[in-house]
Length: 282
Ligand code: PAF
Image 1 (cartoon, rainbow, N blue to C red):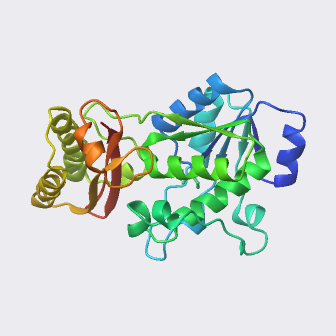
Image 2 (spheres, rainbow, N blue to C red; image 1 turned 120 degrees about the vertical axis):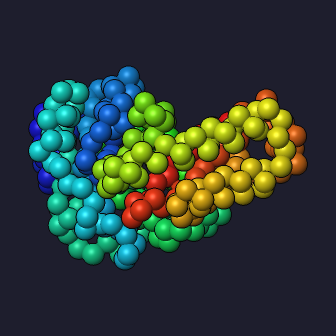
């Protein structure tokens, strides 16, 4: 595997490649990321990964400085997945001048849910994804469903700018107790790690109740929020939404909820000092 930090060298290395499958990451790779590499392999060749902790998508009070950076371990993991190139630019490689041109997703998709609690997050994501795509020129790019809203926003970015890159979705990888794998899980204390699967448990409970015919979504959301609070969490949101546009379900969506496979339940909550997100398609 070649580890490349300059955009110029990356372009040289990838010249003539027309079927690149790309997996952008922020590093601290776990089994979830590796499953994205395997998915990429099914859709293209060679597989190119990137590791870049993108300052633009972190708020002033978020965890940019303490975000785990484990490049050596990450390189070993990517080597064993037969990744062809790892693009690991420094901040000056990727942002040699202040990045003043930015991509802002539409407010009705970018300022809800994660966007409401992390202002500017999706503009930071869209801007770096556009720039990484411009460097790598991938035929396909793989994004995990764990970041459901990000996946949807990137997909629409690619569509609306007619990018020559198909966006492929990969399923969330979970620990045996249901906790979705995340680089931020390493910040959980042992007690919080034992508590953390409650989030997935509550999402599964909501899914099961919707599938059993429960129509009072506001009640389901409020019950789950109260259960998190009672267990010491600080929930940001627990929301049953339409998969297609993440809007609040209308009467038709609610009427067909058991059969239509049109809904998703999404949640974000803080446990100790760690903010966890998860979601489940219904
Ligand atoms: O999902 C992530 O790790 C990041 O948001 C991404 C897509 C690599 C952009 O920085």
